[in-house]
Picture: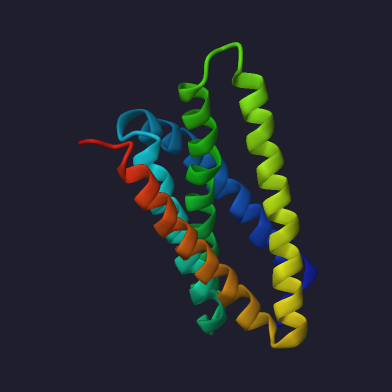
Amino acid sequence: FGLSASAVGSIFMGMSMVGVVCTPIAGRLLDSVGRVRTIVPACMVIGSAMMSAPMVDDIYSFVALVCTWTAAGTLLGAGPTTYISDMTTSKNRAQALALLRTAGDIGMLLGALGAGTVADMFSQEQAIQANGIAFLALSGFAAIRFATIVKK
């Protein structure tokens, strides 16, 4: 879009504001709907946003897409942490949360490596769409896995 540095900064500021506004809402959803039932839809929204990003052709659609992505990311950020906290004993909680964080960091490293490789070989658009496909595929795997947990 040919954005200036201040415009990019304004978008990041808006993303932070969306995150701040959505955090208490995410907490209420996680407590009322359940951790498992919020993780998969949040993943699917993020994956869909990734897949849609290269198709956005104006700044207003881009801002709406980024705000949606950020709102889902806020929910996804809290979901797994609260889920693991609920599932572990107080004795094992710190170790389980550290393992979650480590797995997330490894995923970020491998994801960046994979996205960079796809971007170098093909294009940035295909790289972000490949990330979206991976996110949706993992959402499907998580849905199948969580289906055994949720009995309602």
